[in-house]
Length: 340
Image (spheres, rainbow, N blue to C red):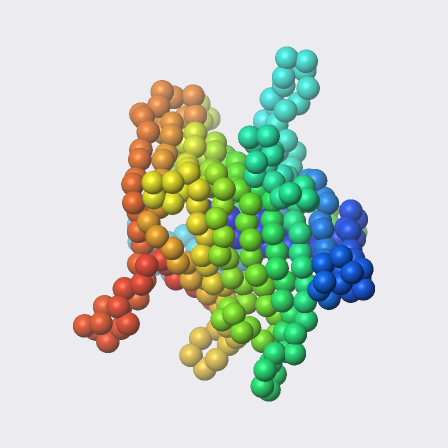
């Protein structure tokens, strides 16, 4: 869930490259209105659609072991994770299509729930304030980007795996597209909807006196909710039987004994050294969380629910105990993402 939250934030910030619907103020205008030099950007885009998203693994899984062994089945052939439309048509009483991810893999818009309670006051998708600073000492200069992101309504169609296609041949001869092989595709997740509240982040490029490139230190009003999550098992699919599915109506995450969710995270990017490849490190801080999972259905999304599951006061830790030479357990989590 945290990964989806970060993806939504980074996607919103990346939209600054799109000149459409931006409102920019130069230093002089900003100084006159706020008493501070700098650059302010309001991103007024109301919706973002992505037809398909592919993440290609160019060398696949190396062949190893024998049938029945863990990790068996690798061919060393490129494959890809695919996010695409789920192809399901849902019509309202007037015959109007209401499934926004029927033909789109990802649709991102503002979260208009509760009369706009989760939107920025500006009603922009995101507001950025950018300042440059000389810093201190050698190589101390940096850019500071203070980002505010409206609550988001992120709908994802279907997530699966496929064989990677090839650029410049067949259907891709006249584009940079690579895509996948439609006849070699398996769905893994039938889709989900992610709803967030407002988020604040501070980004520093160049030197990072705040201690990390990206710092999240904010309260997401209304918490985080994942809805309509379906996990598919295609190994059970036959000509007469649909793939098995674990379907969850809703997963709600908040601070313990609260309706809101505190986000405290440091995100840093480390370069390659003699010991390892480069990687992204995400350290999450904060207290215990409550989780409520509603409407768990086994076999299919139309099956009767087996009930709800509630977890109160979930707390994770990272670090080694002092008895083993570590600095002791720290509340939160440390996640490292790298290639291999």
